[in-house]
Structure formats: C-alpha cells, structure tokens
View 1 (cartoon, rainbow, N blue to C red):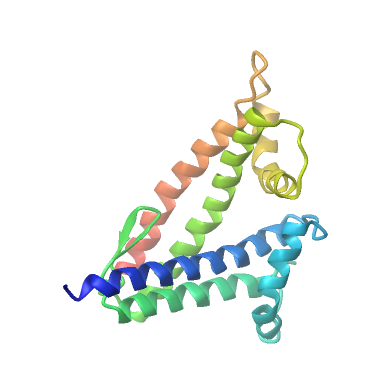
View 2: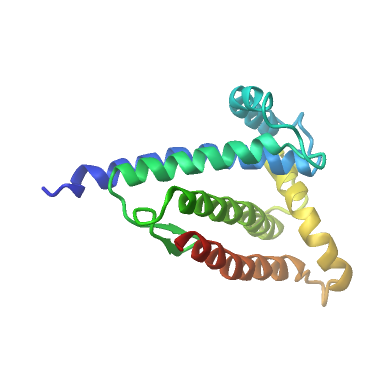
Amino acid sequence: MGSNYFTSPLAFIITTLFDLYILLVMLRFILQMLRADFYNTVSQFIVKMTTPPLTVLRRFVPSMLGQDSASIVLCLIIIYAKFILLRFLDIPVVAIADVPAPIGLVSYVGLIIYSIADLVSLFISVFLVASIIQVVISWISPGQNNPVISLVSTITAPILSPIQKRLPPMGGFDFSTMVAILGLMVSKMLIIPIIIRLGSF
C-alpha cells in the first residue's frame, strides 16, 4: 500500500466536511442578503448550525453595506484552513470550479487568493444549483410549497426577475431559468481561472 492509501480518503473526508459547513455559512449570508424568511425550518437549521462561530467573529468584524461581513470572513477562514490541512497531507493540487489550483506550490498569500476563488465559485454555484432545482421543480411539481422550494424561489428571484422582464415566456415555455443557468456557468468559467492565476504568481 502506498502513502496515498490513507491520505486520499482522509483528504476526501476533510474536503467534504469543510465544504458542507462552508456551504451552510454561505447560505446564511445569501439568505440574509436576500431578506429570506428566517422562520422557515431550513433557515432555522442553518442559523442554529452557524451562529456559534459567527457570534464570536462579529465582535471583531462589523457589518459592511448592510451585509453580514462576518459570514464571508468565516467562509474564507474555513476555506483557508481546509487548504492548509490538505497541504499538510501533501495534496499538491485541488480543483476549484474544475480549474487546477496548485496549493502545494504557492505562498500563504496565494492560498488566500485561492480561498477567494473557492468562495466566489461557491457563491455562483449556490445560485446555479438553485436555478437547476427550480427547473426540476417546475417539471415535477409546479405550485407545490415546502420550506426547500420556498428558499429556492427566494435565491433564484434576483437572478430570474431581470431576465424574465427582457425574455417573456414564448409558446408557453419560460426560458429565463435556462438563460440564467448558462450565464452562471459561463461566469464561473470566466472568473475563476483569472483569480487562480493571480494566486499562482
């Protein structure tokens, strides 16, 4: 058995656990930004899971432009810690939005920039996945209401509304969600490589 026999599964576990919690913090930021219903049961779960570290961090990180800056800072701290742990395990490269990021070769400042790239990728991915879920819901159970569907609608509304104003339904079909999905995918393809290149210098 090579040295990677235990390292690869451990790296997978670390990445999965860290990414799940980072996702919860990012969702909290987005839901606060969009003024979502925090009495929603899913929202309540996200709040309970993320409140302890945010309570501490908010003592040092004030809100900016009316947004919860502490949530973004917490995301960056956790992403950075994830990269440090993976580098400690001799993981040379990670994929951020399918773009290779050589975490084993860059400086600590480079890791910060990679952390920003990962954060931006996650931010876009939340809207992308929510838009895909919206499409599936419209096919399977339109009009059905539950806590998840309610939050998905809240997340996709600021993306879909401007498109729907310029692209009304044609022949009974609403193509705005497909346009949003394509736009978000292209945004990731254009933005993330640039940030990763900055961190690689």
